[in-house]
Length: 258
Image (cartoon, rainbow, N blue to C red; front, side, top):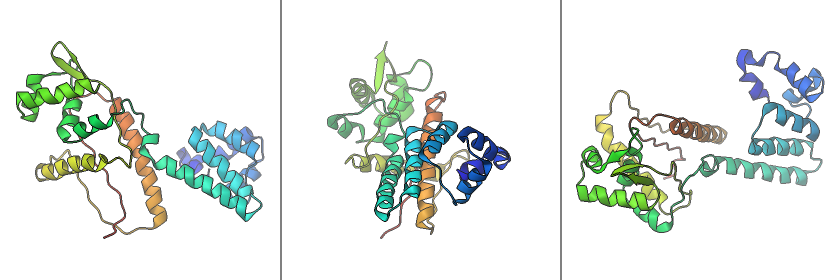
């Protein structure tokens, strides 16, 4: 709550009073809660959740935090800590933050993730109002007519593209691979290989950044969460953006082991 107020315009001036009025408590209690001297009751927490407009996951996290602070035994605190840890793990799963339109079966995944061309051509059909024809796709990716036709036939059958009057349009908006999928390594490798290939001819408008660093485990978790939030915002912005060209975002953040 302290971070929430600090991030408001004018550093949240007057927000403590508004919170107190909404929760039906004194500003003194709000100050004590912000300093960590006291905790809210479960009832006050529910009013705070409504005031802040938290999501279901955020509401659970705040509620469990309050229960942990009010717990009278070490075992009970441990129980609520385990609940908080589970929520943190769930919140970091990209699949919980991203709406998925299409789940490919295993046979489709083997084909789709065998080459970055499948994804690139699928996305390219979203550029422009009327999709793309076979000739435009051959020209854009410098591939043969037979290869383009084979890829397009697969994309249509898988529901990832639609074919109307010999023009191809984007079908399902999003796909997603689970973090333990055997196809994920190929997917990462496909696009990182492309990034390395393009690195020698980057345009001024493009960006590529690599930074090995040392940092605390706590800051690693904080930055990991911020990146997960960014990915959600990135996908929301892309979803609402006019399709003028195709691009790729690769984002890596990992502990250096060997």
